[in-house]
Length: 227
Image 1: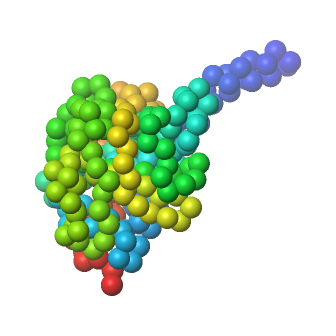
Image 2: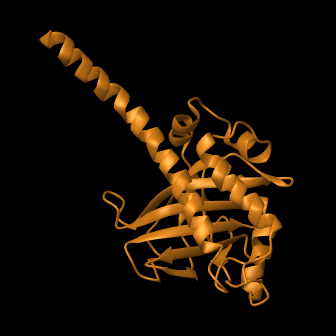
């Protein structure tokens, strides 16, 4: 009896990380939907709808940490989705690391949103990783109902970045940050190895927990900003 209990305990230790890991992916998708919904409804100060409509892809990293253990800088995990005609792709899990930008709007935990304006940065990311400001030009994203206030530098940037911390939302510079896909996270989420490029550019199965995020993106593509 005792041996059976020990064996069951060992088996639970072996299997628990898989379920815990998948739970983390699900949690990030749920948090990303909440973050997007809240940010897009900030009166006068949210992400311009016309910029979202022009973007090729969007990345959302919930609760990016400053000074993460063993990293020595900033670290977070989130998800990336790209346009496929008038729809949005299934999510691909990503991570972001960087030690140079800090959190200009304060706080040790920050939600980060990236608008990727063309496919160059995504192609770099899918090859291995992309360094913002190096492999792909990046700038702090403009806020407001339209992008009319954007500078030439912002409009030429391949990636526009935003952050929210302690209730404040702003476009911030993320120069030097590294974004890459997380293959193990994607395998955990989908239950098998996936081709990230196919998911983002051609589509595929949509995890149930990603449906709210995708439906929000499609909704904001169509509707006018709140008054």
